[in-house]
Structure formats: structure tokens, C-alpha cells
Length: 96
Image (cartoon, rainbow, N blue to C red; front, side):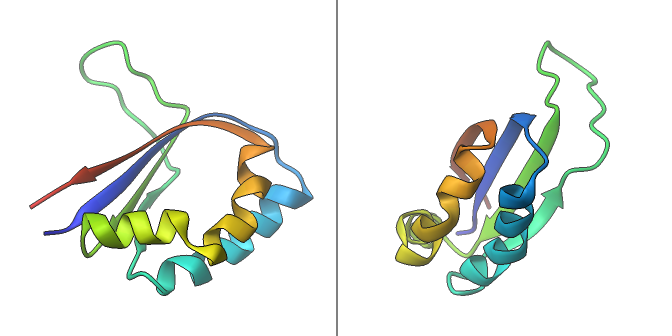
């Protein structure tokens, strides 16, 4: 069953560390079958109060693949580039 990382980026600093993170993150995803479905773009709120600034959705083959990626040495090596320069809400959810 596929699983998804859903990330609401509430604040982001555009700098060299974020540029480096963006240039390196895909290689870490490739190792665990992850692929971006949404990486920014216009968000149109139709109901409710949630108004994400920047939305990211990453698909994985399973929830275990998502966990393994997030906890992997490859991703751990770069995650600080993102967390030092952004505030996010980050969840995993199983799909169909």
C-alpha cells in the first residue's frame, strides 16, 4: 500500500543551504522509492481554515519505505539543511 509524506512549509529562508538541500534530496528519495507528487505550486483553499504556504507531497511504495527514508543516514546527512532554514508540519499517511 503506498504512503505519502505531506509537508506544510510554514516558513522558509531562501539561502545556499536550502539550495543545497533541494539539489541533494532527490538522490535520497531514489534509494527508497520516493517521488515528488507536489513540490510547491499554487494552493487553493476551498474549505476550512488551513492555508498552507507551500505544500509538498512525496509518494513512497509503503509506510515502511517512508520511515526508512526519513531515518536513513543519507537523509539524516542533509535534513539539518532544511530544518535550520524552515518551519514545517511533516506527516506520513498511508494511502490506497
